[in-house]
Length: 472
Image (cartoon, rainbow, N blue to C red; front, side, top):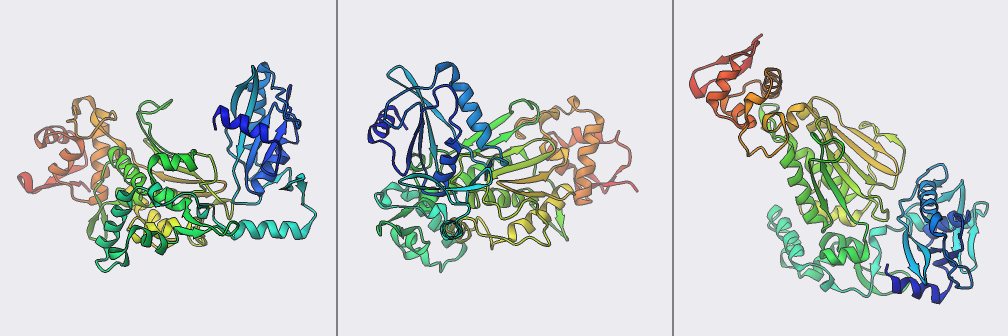
């Protein structure tokens, strides 16, 4: 939103999606009723510092920060606003006066303010809590639509990146040489995936938000969903900030690749046995948690998704349309499709499997990778926690830089080396000098010199054909 657009909104006055509040010295309390009603209807614009006669009163300059803090604190409090909302007020100066602008998106769930349900009409905010028929219709409206199915009749396929659609087609065909997409045009692919729909209100056809998220150019995505972002953070040495970071704001298919590479960069590929075969548990865990956060996120929320890797765990957070609260039980969990159109494309191109398999796979490979169970917490923020062994993020000399840089093992304590090697042996039972050297980034000769000082480990065999085992 820019200065000219704000002035245009003020000039056109209040209507079903525009509300003015004076709030000169303090936050107008009924603003939360309006937030709730806009969220339950089609979204809207709130301007603080403007009266209903379109006069710019202005919020006192010394009160602006207090008003914003009070507003954001209240809407993030689930006891006051449920589900809590993540809105970012903007401050504009017009004619020397401060005006606070708040954009409220259309919600995907029924919103309540202090336990009351509000809806919006041309007459303003209406408390419909005790009107059973209106409440029923509101729930029916919310349950019958998906936010990512929003249609943009004025946008055509040129709004999308043809190279990304082609990439998806190749990925689908590489998995199935007889895939129906192989001989389809870009438009036919979009239609087959339900990414071109008809707006039920205007009866006009157009591409959907899901298609823009999946295949859109970066500026196209930002123009329709400016809050779209996934923040990847690696935090081991610098715990107050981060050691490495990647802010991902591109299409979902390239976002998947970026996030996977970030995880691979900072997590060691440990030797893990599944039965009698070696498996890449790290990449399988990354595949599940990344595809889950991209495909099942509540994109109507401004809450930024995060993937944080530290020396104890991977934590993934994203906004969520909750169907329950608390930790999920694998035995009782019933999967629910959050964004079917996005999930369908992810399955077609091999980034995800059938609904519900991701949680089971994450359990299986986390147990193999770290010997512990993952945690899934359902709420307005969906949180996945993958516990890690220290070895998973162990880099150069006990520090945290690229594994491609040779390590100075002399900077590590014998206990650190012993812990790393024993973890590797426990995961694979038999570990060669080459295996250990590759993880630590040193020569096999250097490993041999240090390993001889570690008790309870024995070398079996001769030369490079031998391996290390725990000495029972």
